[in-house]
Length: 137
Image (cartoon, rainbow, N blue to C red):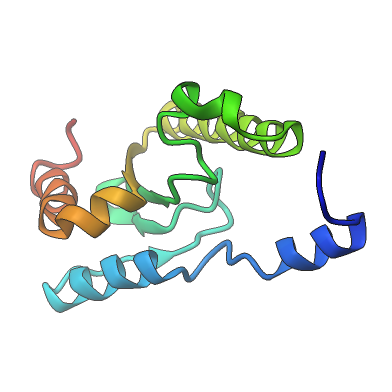
């Protein structure tokens, strides 16, 4: 059971950033410093990818571990039904957007919050590698 009223929950959820998060800005800054050009949060593409390298047909999603359910099956039983529903809806939407982008010819990279925090150089290398090989995965 949710301990907050619907109004309190709504107010709390409205404060959660959907774009321009710290980890997204960090990755964007690092890539710009390396000379890469991209657009952010392109609404015309499925899921509004966080980073879009249009010329290379590469999109990057930078996902929070909780909101997008990193290793979700391992901990789904620990969350309340409200959050279970929210995370499962997010995961289904992520899968749907991934399929739409792939069908449209885009290469899709998903980078998790914990990966950026523990190995940002490795995350950047994944993106740069895909850019240099023309997006082949």
